[in-house]
Length: 329
Image 1 (cartoon, rainbow, N blue to C red):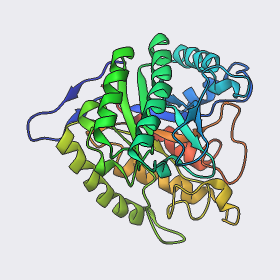
Image 2: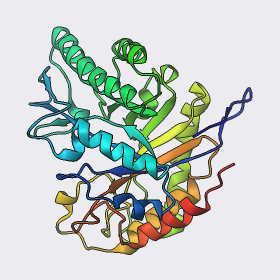
Image 3: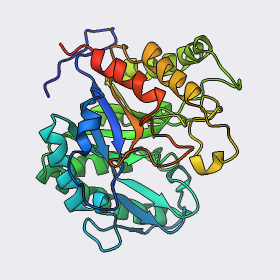
Image 4: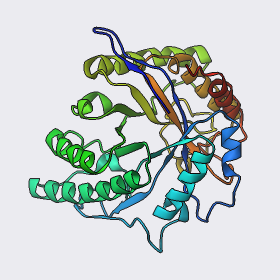
């Protein structure tokens, strides 16, 4: 893909070709063939792939990972990433490698060491983890690499991140992004060292049980204002490294809540689809918006309720409408 990135002085930059993406779920078993046909029909032109590193607790400085391992799902292994990449490329769908840290009993935003010595040990381990995947991404010519996701209590350590980014640049020649939680992105001070401002865009859109599209669009106005302040400051395009909504009645209230915590929620396609509609009406056409990746897309199709996947639901129809009609200069 070729992009034109313009930023006249004192103006918000313009990104001319959008990444129309989904977060691809690494499958337990090898791809059977044909999995990308359904995705391609939506107009999508990008996926993210997510291998994992494992951390025993939020204050443990040790991270465990394997590019190839016996206990991995096939789609999260180096071999699976390569085959998925090749299949995506054959359909003119680009890839982002987006390694995550899985923390037992918590989430990455709670990772916090108890001492400076432990922080340095954690960054040493994390740097080795990311560099392994950076080398893999470079060897496979993956055009985008995400260097971290939702590490909210670690991302304030600016100099440690700048050192990590410099190390990654030495082994990886593609574009870099960090995926900041929607509660975190305004505090990041190292956006200038990256190619994109990345946001996990699970912004709340309404407190109401049955919000209207107009109410959701109004909520986006304040979120957009916050984003544009960061864009003007750092003069970088924005990628929503994740955005998504469950097919439940409360999807707009707390979009980040995991499906396992929504077992009592009413299943409904309509609110999920309205959330998608609101994003496209309120954010998609902003000049700084380089693209978005919807969480999430199963190779074998939608599997459970409730879930974030739009597959086979009204939300997929909304996504398809905008992806197919999005201008490509």
